[in-house]
Structures are given as structure tokens and as C-alpha cells.
Length: 420
View 1 (cartoon, one colour):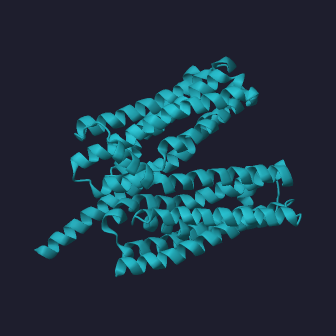
View 2: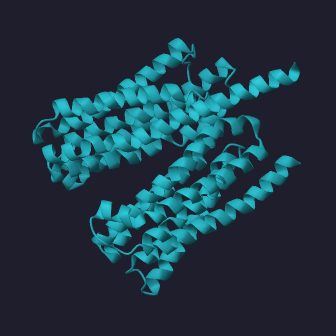
View 3: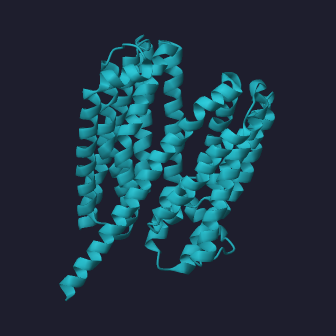
């Protein structure tokens, strides 16, 4: 009887895991595709210059979003997962995280407004920039970490998909001429606000999780706990943007397109193992299973390898489809080595360092890879090798490899410690 109960329990556990992975996978695919639906329409209606301003405002707001989130979506999901049966603790976690987000949201509104005002090209479209800041209400109100920690990805998916479908429909119905550019951020911001409001409503009134008065000490604790993830996000964002800038400056704008295509293919290959890490994170945070962690690494690497092989087989056709012209395949093929390295490195970072409470090692590994990245750039500059895209791809692979070496070193230390 006991054995039968264990089998039933494991069966239910696997069912929840598969369900969460399915919903998250669908959501991620949807989030990748839905902006492409309105893209050609908005370019046609608003014109490239005005739509470029809209996109620039969104990019600027995305930097503010990084600060508002402060790495909480990943780290605080662990706290929710561990305390999923303690409603009082869940109330405390939710309330303090939302409080911290609100404070950062207000502070960065003034910083964002200042930047939008002092840059001449931004100031001429100041209204669009100010309205676009409301995009950040998504990071302010939408508690993804809460649903992720409770393994309720179905709720996230339904709310996200529903609000974004409505947003897309409103874009086609309302935005009809160039002067309607300011309506684009209003529509998107309204959708994000409604999505966040619905999520909080479900938590408070359906799940019966109360919002309580935040505690300053607890708020600071969550900030500190998320600081390594936050620092990682900021450093990665800066490094990625710098590579774009340097390729355009030293190599040429046409090569930026090739570099961008390589990064996009990189992102497509990376999505499956990132989904696996996200879905498995709450379980590893709770169970601290080294065996399960090792299985994730092996599966992620094999799956990534299969996807890389398939893309390489059809790479010529893929490049013709996107670039409409012949170009060398070697840069893209080298780019695709990156996901193979990261399929192991990323799992170690998120599903071991963070899930097991060794957040500092994640931050240290980013410092290592950033230092190697900067040193390689300086060497390339001093030796006069900044004029080819192969240089930047090689630098990326070297920095990824140094990151992997550091993380494997620390992984062995943690595994030995956990087993003992």
C-alpha cells in the first residue's frame, strides 16, 4: 500500500511538472511571436522614424524594468516554493517584494524622465517616452515569481496571452495614422496594468494571500538575496549592447545584421534549456536533489546539441530566408557553439548556485567572464584585430568558456559539500 501511494504521489508530481513546462513553453513561444504580428503594421502606419522612436523609448524603459525587478523573479520564486504551505510567509514575501518594486518604480521614473528630457532627440517626443515608462507597471504589478514558485504556470499563461491578444487587437483597431504614435505605449501600458491587476486579484481574493504592511528589514533581506542575479542582469545587458556598438563601429553596419542573426539563432537554441531550468527551479530549490540536477545538465546539453545540428544542416536556407543574400556560414556556425557551452553553464548557475543558495558564485562567475571579455577586447584593439566579425564571435566564445570553467570548478565544490 505504501509503495502504491508513493507511485501515485510521483505520478502526480510528474504531471504537475509536465503541465508547468507545457504552459511555460507555450507562453515563451507566444511572447516571441506576438510582437512580430504588429511590427509591419506599425512600420507602415507610423513610418520608420516615428516607430524607431517608439522602439527606442521601449528599450530605455526596459533598462528601468531591470532595476524594478531587481532579480526578484528568479530568487524570490525559491522563497515562495520553500514556503508554499505557509500563507503568512507567502503574504510577507509578496508584500515586501511589491513594496521594493514600488519604491524603485518611483525613483526610476524621475531618472528615466531626466534622461528623456536631456537627450535632444528624445525631448522632441517627450510625451511618447513618458507614456512608455508605464510599460514598467508589468514589472511592478505582475508577480511572476509567486506563480512560478507555486508551480501555477497555467495562470501566468492565461493572463499573459489574454491581455496581449487584446493589446494586439487594439493596435490594429485604434492606431490608424502617424499622429496616433502616442496611443501605442498607452495601449501596451494599459494591457500590462490590467494583467498585473488581474494577477494580484487572483492572489488576494482567490488564493486568500493577504497583502500586509511591509517590513523594512525583510525588504532589505530580499534585495540582498537578489543582488547577485540583479548585478548579473545589468552586467549582461551592458556587455551585449557593447558588442553591437563595437561591431557597427569597427566592422560595419552590414556585419551588425549577421551578428544580430547569430544572436537570434543563439536565443532560439537557448530557449529550451532555459525553459527546463525555469520549470525545474522550484523543485530543486525545495528538494536540493544533486541527482536531479545532474540529469538536467545531461538532458539540456543533449537537447541543445540536437537543435544545433539541425540548424547547421539547414543554415544556408535559414540565412537566405532572413538576409535574402549569400554570406559566409562560418561566423554563424561558430556562434552556435555558444549555446552548447551555455547549456551546461546556465544550468549550473541557475539550478545549482541560485536554487541551492550559493548566489554569490553566480555573480563571481559573471565578473570572471566580463573581465575576460574586456581583456580580450583590449588585446584585439591593441593588435589591430577589431575589423572582423570573427574577432567578436571568438571573444564571446572565450568569455563563455571561462565562465563555464569557473562554474564547473565551483559546482564540484558545492556537490561535495551537499553530499557530505
